[in-house]
Length: 190
Image (cartoon, rainbow, N blue to C red):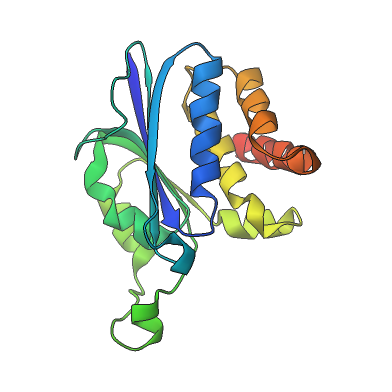
């Protein structure tokens, strides 16, 4: 048994923290774990990706096209960019957030207006919700990533609930643990 998770978003959304939580939860559950991240232009609003594999024998974090069991995206265009990594029947968990890239704001490109329809066509198993709005409702927009991890935790059943919570606690600063745990539980409840 091996599980492959691809996370994607835009720099500053917390993709790397989400990957850290997932990898730590898998490790704490006793699985072999490999992970990596790509964040070239992340500080300038560029794409960020993280790959996590865990299971009986995870030897490389690299996920081939059509190999991800789960694709999780904190920005919906980034989900479309990575759609080819999700295996047939895989789960896409996507936030309905639009972060306009410089190419669009400068007039060099146009942001599509039909993103929800495109997502529905591309992902037969889609959980689509505005996690940024949920996080704002919890009082801190930075919690969108932890909400998304909560959603994923309900789908990745190989890791027990308490192990997920412990991974959240260990991955964030002590001052932020309580609100991240609340965000995690909120997401899990969705």
